[in-house]
Length: 252
Image 1 (tube, rainbow, N blue to C red):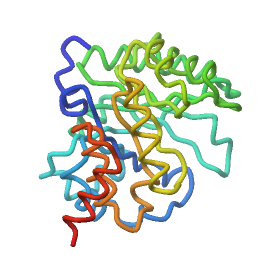
Image 2: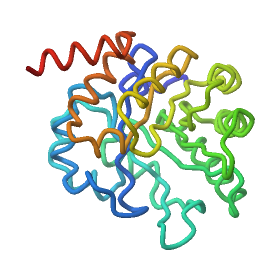
Image 3: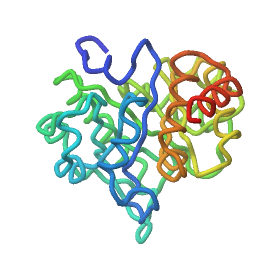
Image 4: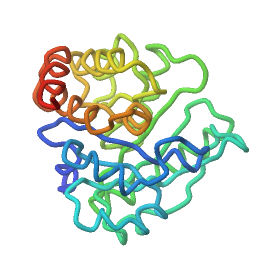
């Protein structure tokens, strides 16, 4: 991580709340109809957003926002083979867009796993050359358990990631220890708020650096409320039951 000063904008005091909004290329997702409006609702409580280059290029709010920008370099669609991620832009393009970091999605065990790992290895070297932080979204294909998630996290570390995003497992402490780099958990599909917040809290207790949650934020009826609670849990270490009461009280 030497020389990657941009990393401080994403990992603030070694903790982070990231909201990925790259889902629209995979399939149409409710909640992403107007990303600038969404960023306006959440920017005061999140550390970074993940966008594809076209969205970032057309954004007006990002020009004056303090939220860190991570450009996602890989993509696939549900109409093809969604696990076979392909690179669709470059680190250089992300720099031109004013990004603070880039992200790459790798599916361990996918049909084209070798190609994905090869591209990841090369991207990490380019990132090192520019001092650009690299977030790797590393997911095991098939069953997600301690061993497969540990493997996915370690693969990202071995190939040069600065931060790795993986699915949550109960034994996150073992994943964190094996990964050797900051670990953030994926938010997963939209779920009950209490279950989501408890999952984030458990991950932090196990040593995770934070959360990268998309659908549990942008598909919420009140995205601002969700990220306010996440900020309190992640950055202030407040138990989620206490945070929920505080936020609901301040909203009245």
